[in-house]
Image (cartoon, rainbow, N blue to C red; front, side, top):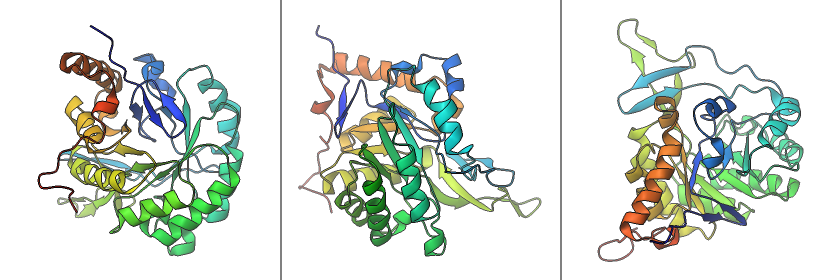
Length: 308
């Protein structure tokens, strides 16, 4: 039996397989439990330009079907990335994707230029963070602010540029098309959904920041819907992210049109989940006689034609 080909292309990059971590859920500590080079790519925790402590505690709480987090993007800054993190990750063969974020257009543009270094394969722009120039609304909430920040980012780097969108917008396709029009090489759907939880005994929010990002299985239908919508509207590849924990989850996103997927919350529950999913995907392809992922990516069948 011929070996199935798990490789995928995301823009100009080729990955050995479609499984990669979601930013914020991956660190060098995982090297103690599995070979990190089995992954299609390494997506680092979001960095900001300066040092940042993050939000007040508690920062995480469990929910039915997932979790809430209000970590607040703690960061050791660009110097730590350049001097410590980049040399460490350069020893791996898997392509390195650097996630960046900022609270203003100028900060974003500056950071994109500074992380465009040898050894970095792509930049994932976390445009789902608050924009202080738009009353705290995320850049990716609206097409106009998405277009403007992506235009600024594109001008500062020649590296492949991914736009990570938010599910907290009512116009995800318009936002994705705006990112594509201004130079995004791929769209990531999506970041966490804004949520809240209250301790009924104390009547206080369960997060120190009051609200936080919801992730895990409960958000998968939202992320899958966004992935389908954006994959069918955009010419650039879409990377699915949200609630992926099983082989069926991976297959759903690929069939919906995702070129690759990111795994986040599931890693907290099972640190080896990504390695397991890669092995299970290979076994499934062999059993089904699927020789390449191109046979299933975007193969969703809509009764009666294309869905709105």
